[in-house]
Image (cartoon, rainbow, N blue to C red):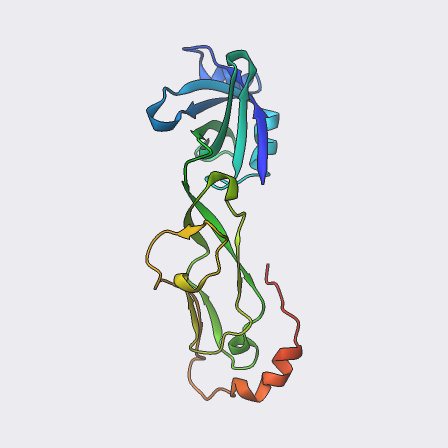
Amino acid sequence: MEFAIVCEPREPGINPRKLRRMGQIPVVLYGHNGTESVSLMLSKVIADKMLNAVEVNNTLINVEVPKLSLNFKSLLRDVQKHSWKDELHHLSFFAISGKDSVTTTVPLHFIGEPIGVKFEDGSLDLVLNSLQLQCDPQNIPESIDIDISHLKVGDSIHVGELVLPVGVVAIGEDDRVVTSILAPAGGSKPSASDHSDHSDDSPAVDPN
């Protein structure tokens, strides 16, 4: 997924509150490899639309500044809002090169109802709901799908077992637990093998 915005140069010293009253959001575009940052402004209408469509550190955004002849592929790095009002104050972008790998965080999407929950009275323990990845900026996945329908009580999935897109690498230890099925508190549990025929016929249920 890619999003595009058009920004205007921001005059040095102009009060951010004045900008926001004018319907503009202060923006900073940080350059790559220490390149000098650029002060910009973006229409609040466009900013709100963008924030409804993209994720911080996840979505590739094309930032164009026609008056400065600038056009960058970037990642949204920071969103600043009022401490208690839902009021947008400031946006920060980081310009990237197509040849660079980037570090990003993507959500994990769990698919299916585990055998251990459906037939063994176990409970699903979601240890991680997102994962930090390193990849080419053009290949940032929107999410990582994980099939959990086969898990029985006592089973778990680790980071090293995840199927990631080509060129995408998980950052951190491979033995980290992503999710597991916990045994019920006390009492005996039915055997999942007793229900194997039923589980094969059951459609996967997406909890999301």
